[in-house]
Structure formats: structure tokens, C-alpha cells
Image 1 (cartoon, rainbow, N blue to C red):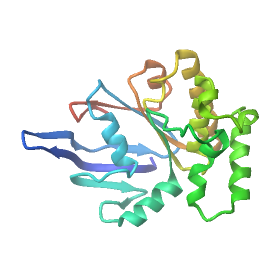
Image 2 (image 1 turned 120 degrees about the horizontal axis):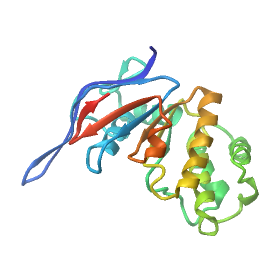
Image 3 (image 1 turned 45 degrees about the horizontal axis):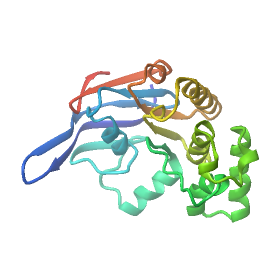
Length: 225
């Protein structure tokens, strides 16, 4: 099988004056390309930390992370940032949509760091918003949207740069089961169309059931894979 991301014996350790916390504890996993993988486990098990590590948002304390077979630990911060922009889309547990920007401006943000014109960035963003059936609200501020519409903007922002890897941290935490099913259907369509690799962190049975591969964590360790 073709694996787009793998880890070998990675640790993420936090130290304070009082104690040492091993948020991720000697984890080795493989993420298959073009499939949906769900990282599961109770609250505090290390799901979000592991997502941040494999999404190149932070460095591991020990061990190695490989992206398409290449080790990332020795890459410069500048190159890591470039990889994140080019290969990853992120849907965070908190949407982090900016209230002073409208729908179009929020969804377009990832493209502003790329070497394309504002016109092209706008057109690409409107295309994605149209596919998500929210292009009629491009001028609306986030506080004027329903929960489902705001989630669509969140999805659009993650997909607008056409990433190879989509990372979603507890994507159903702020929406009900109906909107969760709608969200999963949208992701499924893009996953099929783009051969998108999707990595969820969730304890929601609806999200877990939609995945090809499950990695279960407890106390920062893999207990089943």
C-alpha cells in the first residue's frame, strides 16, 4: 500500500517545573494515500497533538515523521511552512473564522500567501463556494451565517488550495448530527474527486464509521491500529 505519511517512534513531551507530560508516547503509524483515516480515543488521549505533528504544525520531541517517504524533522521552518501551504488543508475544532471578514474573504485567506493574482484567488474561491452551495453569501459576515453555513466556509477555506491532505480536528464538535452527515458527504465527494487523503481526529461514531482506517489512542499511545 502507498503511504503518504508515516511516523517512527515519535514522542511529544512537555516539561514544567512540576512534571513531565508525554502527550504522544512512542507512536508509529502509517497513513494510506487517498483514504480516510480516523484517530480516535477519549478526551486527553493525544488526538489533537498527533494531528498537529503529522500536519507539520509542530515538531516531535523524538522520533521521525515522514511525508511521502522524506523525513521532515530536519527541514527548515521556511520549507515546512511551504509544505503546509502546498499539501495540507486544515479544519480546526474551533473554526477560527474572522468576524470582520466576509465569507469570500475568510475562504480566500490560504490563497493570499501563494504566488497568484487576487483575481485568480477570488475566482478559485468562488468556484469552491459554489460547489458548497454558499456562493450566494459571499458578502455576508460570519455572524450573519447559520452554523451549517459557517461550517461550509470552514470547509471551503480548507479546500480552496486543492490540498493533497485534509486534516480535520473534531469536525463535528460544534454541529448537530444532521450537519455532521452533510459535512461527511461533502468531504466524501472531494475525497473521491481529488484522491484526497483525509485524517480526522474524533470520538463521534458518525465520523468514525466513515473511515477506511482507524488509529486508537489512549494516554498518548496507540492501543490499536
